[in-house]
Length: 289
Image (cartoon, rainbow, N blue to C red; front, top):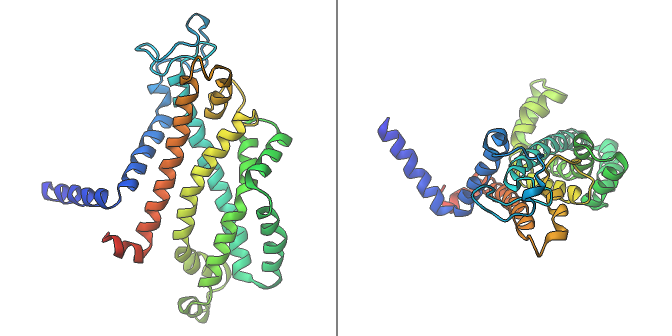
């Protein structure tokens, strides 16, 4: 048992030396996820409690990240903001990925007029519009709220997954093992889920990890514009928006939520790069993984 632990620890140190950014990304995401999941237990104050007597205080022993213009504890709001960003990013990426797998897989597997209709009139139409502008338009139409925000971001993000899935399916559907499955009598969904999907999922997972970073940034952008999670829920974007008027007299109100957004985005980007290196046999050979 001790030998096994020592061997795993030795392999982990080798991986850290060869992929330091991956280790940094994993550490950032561990902190991000832990803060989001354990926010009710880690937060020293209620994030919505107003205390005007201690408004706009700087970082101190009582308030590690200071207080905002209403006297609310910034550190507690950052923790609950991580909870919101985590929930939004996981839900949006799951919804976008489900749509992308369904539409992209259907277009790539069936081909013909189905592929033309879905690619030309659906994917290309959504890809022609900037995703964040499309999300802003839908969020403004639907109004603020968690599920409205998720719907707006999913509508703006599914087309990228669909295009990737379609390209991967087109490259795999004529492989020998797929032809062998057809020869044995397999059809339709069985071939797709049993033989095609397992062989295209690697790049899709990498795209999903990087997409999490984009969703966090988009959620912060929409919340900054007042189109995200409504007050008094503590979103990082809304915290930055509230701090604009105090940029010079209380810069910590902008610096802490901005650092939180940057850390979460970097963590997911580094994780996506690490997954790509780990899942690509050629890259693994070059890095000696």
